Image (cartoon, rainbow, N blue to C red; front, side, top):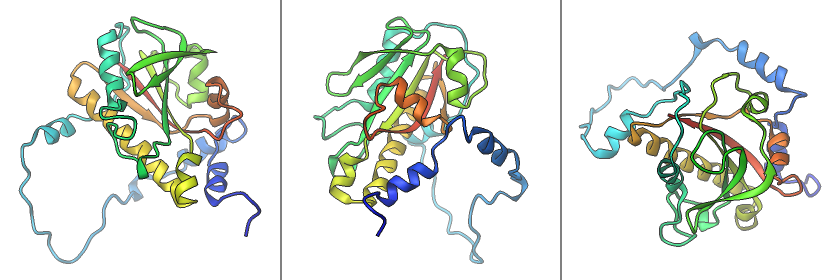
Amino acid sequence: MIDDESFYDIFWDNTNLSRLNMAQFANQISLYQPEYKEQMLEYPDKPNLLPLPKSKINKITKNRVSDRDFTDKVMTKKELGLIFSSFYAWNSLEHRSYPSAGATYSLEIFCISYNTEILNNKILYYDAENHGLSSTNNSAPSWKESTEPLNYNNEISPNLLVIYVIFPSRVTNKYGDRGGRFALLEAGAAMQQLSLQIAESNVLKGVVLGGLMDDFWKSKLGLKDTDAQIACGFLIGK
């Protein structure tokens, strides 16, 4: 028995990124040898091939890419509406665009608008029930100030940074430590929902970031004294 700290909390603490260990993380990446990468398992029997249907979802999936070659074109309010519809509660707060264990919905969506028609240079919260963006009244870092704590070195600013934030107690209160896995599955489902929305738009592009400095962004979002955990970021531009 390990005091009152859950195994999920220990996992999150051990994977925390900050200025203290960012160099170590970068070194770990530099030592990786891609020629030894294993992407699938192999078995002696030949696979029984399946038909590949030309469905609408498969067409969209085929167009999904990670792309960070952004322009300086302004993102419109209509495009913002398209992006955040990926997280909308279409049939009440317990029935959104992506699944959640026991409809607990531990995920919340925040963003910083760098170059859009509305609410630029503000930290915003997405209201899934009313499909709107609310200012948190917390000061937003500029794009230049954001690059280091995003672990991202591209000087070209995206239009938008979306930040996925997990509140684990919502799901661990019901499922215990196992709920930690469910929270990550939920974040992954929401990430894929946005990826496909971008792929279908034909005018937007984006890239997922998994190396955010946890404490920096928790503080900027005004969540320092909560159990919130930074899951990932998503840069979106035109």
